[in-house]
Amino acid sequence: MGDIGLTGMMLDSDLGGLGDDLFTSVVIHEEMSVYSPAIAMTLGAHAILAGNVINRAGNKQQKEKYIPPIAAGDKVAAICITEPEIGSDAAHPRTRAINKR
Image (tube, rainbow, N blue to C red; front, side, top):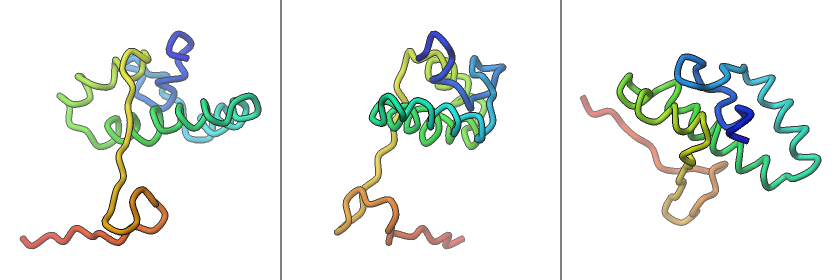
């Protein structure tokens, strides 16, 4: 998938990604899911949930360090979700961050 750019589909093209939009990514995932939902979900976690967060919210140094190997498929991007009493149920988070400044 890295060789044909799928691991960097929504990542900035100047950092090695394809620079695709969300619609294009959804179409790719939908087609891939016909053959392997597991691989499509793994790619989605890598390229959209983890890689795209760094791509959109990371600072310049983070992007330069992480985006090229994520886009190339040389490194796997992942997420970790856990909360007391609900584990990895991302649809029902209870923890909140409060800015006390």
